[in-house]
Amino acid sequence: MPLLELREVHVERGGVLVLRGVSISVEKGEAVALIGRNGAGKTTTMRAIMGLNKPKSGSISLEGRDITRLPPYKVAALGVGYVPEDRRIIPDLTAEENLEIAYGSPPPDDMLDYIYSIFPELKKVRKSRGLYLSGGEQRMLSIARALVKNPKLLLLDEPLEGLAPKAALSVSKALKEIASQGISMLISESGIIRRVEGIAERAYGLDRGEIVYEGTLRGILEDKHARERIWGL
Amino acid sequence: MIPIELLIAQTINGLVYASILFLVSSGLTMIYGIMNILNLAHGSLYMLGAYFAITIIMKLAGGSPWGYLAAFILAPTAVMAVGAAIEVGLLKPIYGKPEEYQLLLTFGLILIFDEVVKLIWGPAYINFPNPGRFLGSIEVAGFEFPVYRLLLIALGFSVAWLLWFLLSKTTLGKKMRAAAADREIVSALGVSVPLLFTGAFMLGSFLSGLGGVAAGPLYTASPGMGIDIIVNSFAVIVIGGMGSILGALVGSLIVGLTRAYAIVIYPAIELALVYLIMVIVLLVRPVGLFGKPEEVRR
Image (cartoon, rainbow over all chains, first blue to last red):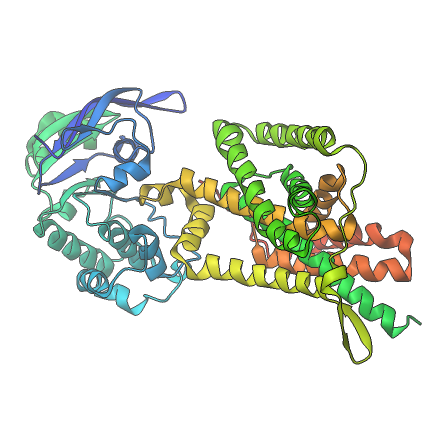
């Protein structure tokens, strides 16, 4: 039984079908990439899994349990961590307070030690308000916030997009470490395959709400159909 | 020249009125800030607090001093239960609908509560037994200070401190602030936003009911008292900034003291002055003294 399974998921946003029969799966301990251009439906796929967009039809299950219609907080409680593309750090709260609301109480020292071992950069800004964190720090905090719940599955929406090279390197290194700990991932990427190499083995190609490729990450570049649909090459 | 005795008395009265205004407007502004719900019937909960209190004091306690103590605990608790019923039964079904729905619904509730109060307690003003009878007053430097009023001032500031503590020091309060900023991501982080909303609404209702209990012995209970307080509370939160607890505190002090001083200097200007301050604040700083510029709400 796969950890996460989407079957024929259709999602409508503003009267337009943005997902048209998406079927994907993620196994336990596996990191899977979701490749597609902006507007292909990557974010909507993640939002649908999280319960933030209700599918019009199709089903989503986690460890065999149907979660299609569950509200976001219940999906989160079942072990799904969400890292949105726009980070969504609470600006008024400090870095550690952002972790606190996800953990449910002030996180104990061993949890903080674990977080700071993955993101040493966050330790320096632990008392700073979210508003004053750099883009890279916000991205790291957003991932850390999903990690404090000990998730089984992380949904990472373009985690390497728009970061300065140094921050991108740190985040990439952190993601490899998280993956090596056996936490499953669905990680989206808008085009630069190289960025998710070494993190994800397997990939899906998504274009205009449809899955156009399924196979190894490298293989997507050799697949003529997927290449045409995704990059127009 | 205003005699010093009158100035002191009016300062006390102004602070008492500010305390009561704060109890009501802090809940109003908190519910708005966290839930984006403008509860027009928030003043009706204040009215219910006063009526529940008079029943507890007169019918259940026979006018004894213990009746007051019981009323201060039981009446706001009963109002909190009414608030829970309103949020769960009436407001939840219309979240996500256009704002007109909640305005119409909560306005309708004002009319319903006013009629219900007339049915149960009658349309006449009801006087509370004077708590000064057993609390008395204390004398400092030759001036008399009624103890009940001093206690109300202490209550107002204590509640202000407790709310500050809740919102800045506890995880629950931080979740509330986070939900005010971005309820979608808070939900995706595993926080039950529906439960958080019910809790915030109940807390606001409790505070409004507490304000009603506190005000009853000073101003009598009447079916129109809810409208009177809600109008002044709106002035408070517009001046202080909608959604800000500190704003509600400062706004309450401004409105309370302004009214108290104006009434001895030139009574006719009492209410007008409050709205004049409101207009000036709106012109100079449209989001209110401690309000934040409107952000995109998710």
